[in-house]
Image 1 (cartoon, rainbow, N blue to C red):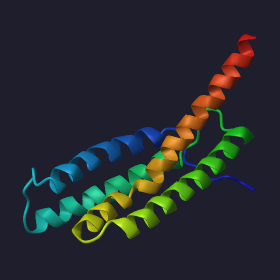
Image 2 (image 1 turned 90 degrees about the vertical axis):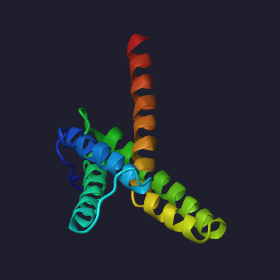
Image 3 (image 1 turned 135 degrees about the horizontal axis):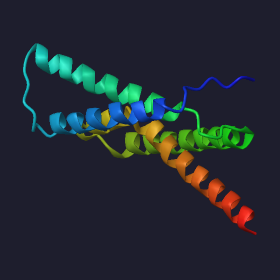
Length: 137
């Protein structure tokens, strides 16, 4: 099965989209950036699109050494992040009500890819550390 991923340079583009969009989203959420009318709609849309595209570019970019082990780690990280995401979603649905749940729903937009990135980077770090340790012996 062919794995279709973006070239590795897309990860940088993803971070360049994700970080400013997230910062702007936080500023809007905390009412530190007041906009109205069409400007508010355009900025809100740009924030959501920037966060979503940035997360996709970060998650779906090739590694420097994309091999079978990397694909295996990628798949395991995706499965584990999905489990964690569903557990958080079910728990929050049962425990959080009202406007607080709506606030969680906003965060929930990017929760799955961010959990995936954390797990995948941690597992790649562990794998690379094991490989480095074996080369030194």
